[in-house]
Length: 281
Image 1 (cartoon, helix red, strand yellow):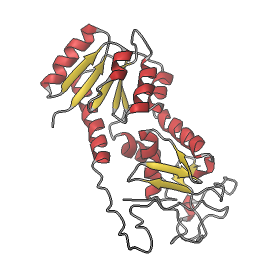
Image 2 (tube, helix red, strand yellow):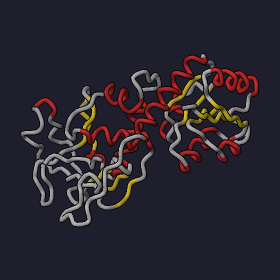
Image 3 (cartoon, rainbow, N blue to C red):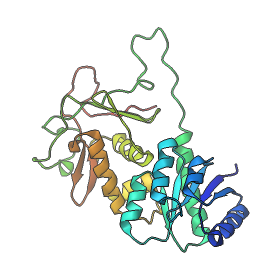
Image 4 (cartoon, rainbow, N blue to C red):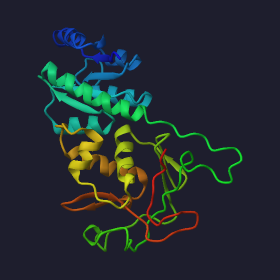
């Protein structure tokens, strides 16, 4: 299947060879030279976004596109400041490439990003629960993740992975629900709006609640095994997730080891296990 790309680049000396080169690799490329035109779309399968545009900052274009679409975005930038790159990634960009770059590297980044996007898009939907069922099918209806109590679990967690005694735990009255099928998140019944990267990060942690994921494991799974961006972007995403979830204790840090989703030591009514579990298709 041909990949359709939207190139938002004002410098014709860069845009023309990019359009020609990408075409040789089988991509269909639409080119616009302003941020306003880029926001109008169509976005295609991936957006290649220059940050230095004449009418508006590329960061604002990234923010605007992300409000309308989950299309993958690769930032093309000559800016050397880490803060600009981290901000772009925080606003929903999937990768960045510093100018000058080679066509082969750009193609590799495009393939990696589109592969991740296609894997997410092709997750099969669960069948609807039968009308006569006594209880809703847990594969369709999100199941609340029971918030942890102060005492960590004694069976599900090895001693080496125990959090420090002083580490806070989420408020017990606010359950966390993660629905992978619809890519929606709720805390205490209130919906939480997350960027694609934030959702993928939270979904990864909910695959095995309480298990510790190293920084490299998270970067490999959520970003890409060949991700060369600033590792500080992971800290930015963790901090933003904690803020959006309304309680920093949902995601616990084990210094020098990694991160994990907090777990529950008790078995509240209506749940089958004391370990929180994300809703899965």
